[in-house]
Amino acid sequence: MKFKSSHIKGKGRGRPMGFPTINLEIPENFELKEGVYAAKIIIDNNVFKGGLHFGPSPTFDEQQKSLEVYLIGLSESELVKYGLVNLDEKIIEVEILKYLRSIVKFRSVKNLITQIEEDVRLIKLI
Image 1 (tube, rainbow, N blue to C red):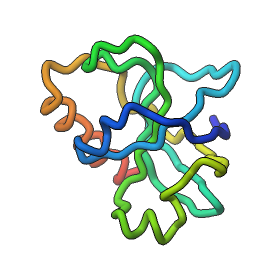
Image 2 (cartoon, rainbow, N blue to C red; image 1 turned 180 degrees about the vertical axis):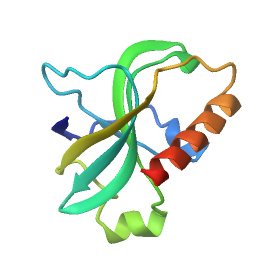
Image 3 (cartoon, one colour; image 1 turned 120 degrees about the horizontal axis):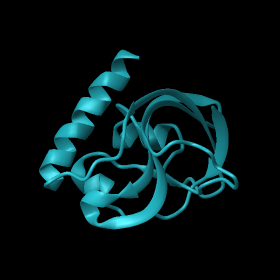
């Protein structure tokens, strides 16, 4: 599955956990099973490996669905280099590569971070 979207303001929880995400507008008639995926992200003809989350955030007691991507392995200086500091006017293309797991409510944020680290490890192998 491939789709295009645009950046929207998120809750800002990813960065303090060590996984800053790009929050995306959920496209109309979006038909993707809730879960975590390996994805290819294209911004301004630059291709990145990423992790995608689609669905609620039960660990934070949120039932509203969100769509967000984490670009794997990019430092702050690389974000500047690729022009990814301000994404407001950019079209973000996403290609789903592989379903990894369902959405889970973790007992703590620390447990969630441990799982995200494992998700990233798996995505790097794809």
